[in-house]
Length: 570
Image 1 (tube, rainbow, N blue to C red):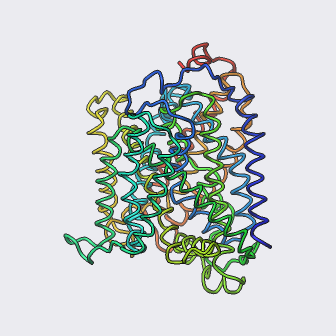
Image 2: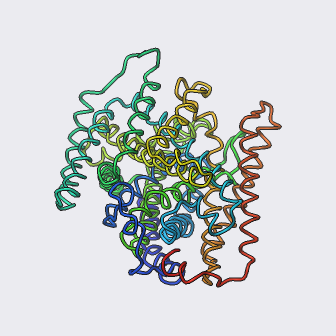
Image 3: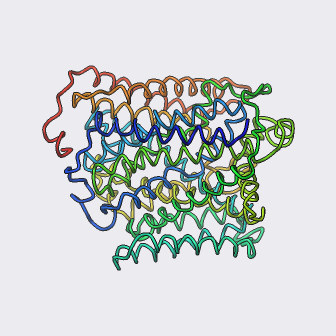
């Protein structure tokens, strides 16, 4: 099978999904109102609440939700075969991720840009809010701590990526200043920034930044983790227009260029898919059901997206009608990246299935541990079809992975600040609502996890990896719970809720199944892990409790929304 045919199938499906299904959701389900006054205008403060051009906001939203997950997850899942990975990525994007991301953005904008966690009190019940907040905070803690060590390791493995990544920060701030303070045009500053970034890719390849083996008693990766969290603290305190928005917008252009290189290289090289369509996996491989739907989260559906939609994106939404482009198209963009990841690792690494299986995807451990590196190598090989040297292509690919992971981490720390502030409001602790303290607590919690423990073979700063196995199921349970909240609200408005209820039920079944399997391993396996077993049990009990509360809310008579809720989100 030629990889180009798989690319055409996936991309055409995305176009059809956006043209028809997203339009159906916008007009028949969410009923977007162009006259609705969004929170960005109602609470405009020039820091967090900033009415934003939909293309700029799409750039922020997309790069924040993308991270490294839509690259790594699909690159692991092809171990079961490219067919199940491809089908879940394509149809998951259209019928799951698009609905979830669009819906959480819409419902948050309708309720004064409250987070999806805070909305549970308004839409479902007060009891569910505290439970939801526990799950959300745990998820953000894992994301921030793990993405820090992932970026740190990439800096160590691909030192040529260091200069372009850090160079992007002052360039993004300059672009933000030109656009918002000088009222400059959007297009040319962004293109200029992208060109400058790629000049730095060439420069970084010539002058890699390699840290000493030990600095202050810390290995290079540990030093980078500290530096990254110091940066994240500062970045989350800046106005969104100064760094977050322009950096994410530049990165969205970078994604378009990267996907262009990927798909153009694919068309010119016209490689054959070397991976099996359905693989005969060796003993010790996790079962495809339900683990496929946990392994590929971002790129099909991810609960973290709902945190971004209802955390930062809803505070910047200029018009309610922009939610379709920002939310649904953001999911489509990530789906295109996940599709590209599948094609890169199945057609860009080896010429034959025997070579692919013997030298790359030898077993589950090799697949799960080497996925990011496989993507970088495969994309560099695709870029070579365009005459780009492999060494430069590797730096280019590493910059893409690190850029997306870094923007996710930026947004993740800011979201943690919002969650801590909401907890302060809920429990009457005004000090927690102060941005400096809430940001400091968010970063301190991440550092405590990162340096308070160490994953086997992970080294200093890898503490987040200790509880990372909990991420997949927690993330997908969060997506299911977010869909429950949207479904309850739609039913209250007297509207059809099937587009959110169907994916919610499917996700709830798969994630509960996966969590029960994991709990069995953690509690009853040959090498029990009581920490993971305890945390997993807490998450599962909280999720089932919230599901029960939501089910009770769904059974209440529909059509009970107030006029304020319909027109102003009150």
